[in-house]
Amino acid sequence: MKESNNILIEKWLQGTLTDEERSQLQASGELQKLERLDRAIQAFKAPAYDVEQELERALAEDSTPVVSMYRHVWKAAAVFVLITAAVVLYFFQAPQATTVMAEAQNTELHYLPDSSKVWLNAGARLTYNKEQWNENREVALTGEAFFEVRKGERFTVTSEPGTVEVLGTQFNVRSYNEYYEVACYEGSVRVANIENKIILKPNQLARSLDLAPLELRNISAMNRPAWIAEGLSQFERVPFKVVVKALETQYGITISPVDSNEMFTGSFPNNNLNVALDAVMIPVGYAYEIAGDEVILKRE
Image (cartoon, rainbow, N blue to C red; front, top):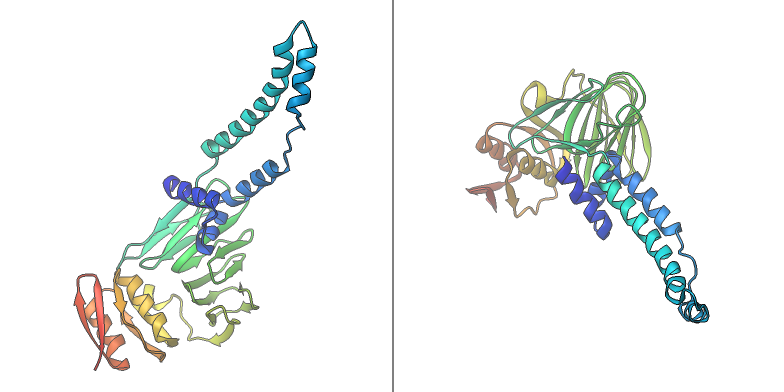
């Protein structure tokens, strides 16, 4: 969206972009243009100008004592105006990013410009550049989404913890800051983070916690992830804090305090908060109290 993209550009100018926001700006195509513009401005050097020397020369010229001196000033001013105009023109004409979000307790089916499909789980956000799609099939993702990608040029999904690259396939990405998980359902998927790279085949999963090296696991054969097929969020030996983050994202709530380091295996429904909390908290030994959008945990 234009307003969202303008905010990211403003934060880039201020030098306050987070890694996640930088990925969104990169997927929109704006980051590359901003960096090119910055390099051009940095490379520009105004001609050397000695004020005292020009003043003496102006005074020595009887016919045009003032015009001679100010001619050089106007040249420098004209260059400055041209650069300023270029910056303003860029921001008014630059293509804007498209951002799609799924509200709490809802999923969103979105068609990309090449008819590839993306199902966004609750709380997920997807950003891409529609105008440059034919040249760059790249999206930025926060949260969880399932992709059905039409065959074609390289398709890239960027998240803060890692990157997925495919040509045409079906896969699911779960990205919650410190936790990153990619499951392949059809074709092959190349997954990478700062530590290593893995090629996934159908019914394989790669995951990483706190930017550790990606680890490979086999999963049960399915046509769709459980959150689409059954309305369930499923986990197998996942840190409890990651499951809590998924609960918060799914229902638009905050849960605290979380002091368990246990690994969780199980699932919770995506349409009933009380049942979901029971499914997650009881096995770990927590009681809970709901106060508006906050869930307060207590050890039983």
